[in-house]
Amino acid sequence: MNSFTFTCACCGREIASLPDLAYDAPFHYHGLSQDERSKRARLDADFCVIDGEDHFIRAVCPVPVIGADDYFAWGIWVSLSAENFERYARSFDDDDQSTLGGMFGWFCNRLPCYPETLSLQTTVVPQDGGQRPLVWVNQAHAEHPLYVEQRQGMTRQRLGEIYAAETCGGRADPPQDPEAPD
Image (cartoon, rainbow, N blue to C red; front, side, top):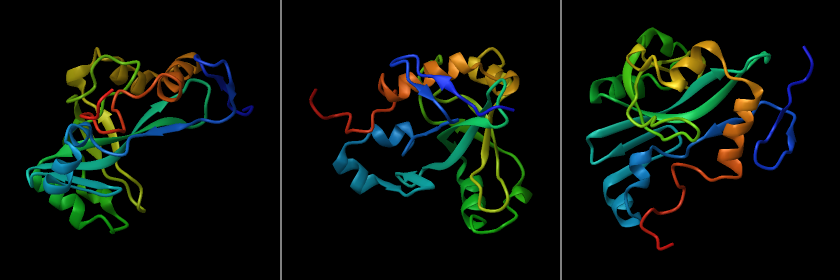
């Protein structure tokens, strides 16, 4: 297959690779002020806990691109029950995390170019060898475009629209403090 390219829908630039787009924290974390974050939340590259009650892990939401040999990946956050979070955290350094099996989770980022994604029901599938878990939108959302694209793939044009929204049009989850003045 030839090298993969697509065109950014915003600036018209030709992109010569399949990008991954990632979020640095769950949407809920960005809803806290800086002061609240320091008092109520713990965040690192793979885990986030808010108020000792809300448990989030970083994961990968893969979407195949029609005509590509690889997936486009959203680096997103999902919430897990306290029990599944602890199971996942305890086995985090194990090479065989897939033995945990699939776990129920809630999608915890808002993706551009989609109807609401926050709180979609998901299945979180731990991976072996230090890979982040995969996230699949559940059948309960069979009409949602993300569910459909995870199973049928997206076009290069659609990837260009998403890329433009993330790089030229701004994120749905703002990286800055949401309470900062405009």
